[in-house]
Image (cartoon, rainbow, N blue to C red; front, top):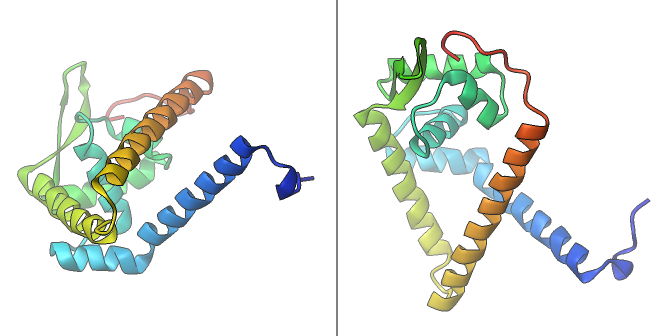
Length: 174
């Protein structure tokens, strides 16, 4: 049974509002129309899963496909299929894993990096248009708080992974 709203603590009420806002932003930015607009404005033709994979690789060092699957919370076979398509399109290549020559990691090619940069530019323009009326101080405060929020989410996720590791068996290419 849930607590009536008027009985919630201020911290709980704020947390509920933050969670609602994040869900709404996630919904709005993840809609098919948004993806179609992103692809049209960036001149690319990628599905949403491929975009997520490219963005994740761009924000990290070259990764094993299995590690990428765990970080994206998807099945390894899903990542493998997407990586094959991205390889055929020239956006990623597999390179030897320096820690284990039997395994491979995935990294962006110049074309993959260009695709990510084009998508980032479209998103930046959209963000700038959305926040055009915000003051410099409000933008700075929001950026700082979002950075702190992301850091805390990452830290919390790392604790969960350590305490309850995913059951992805290691193997060649993972």
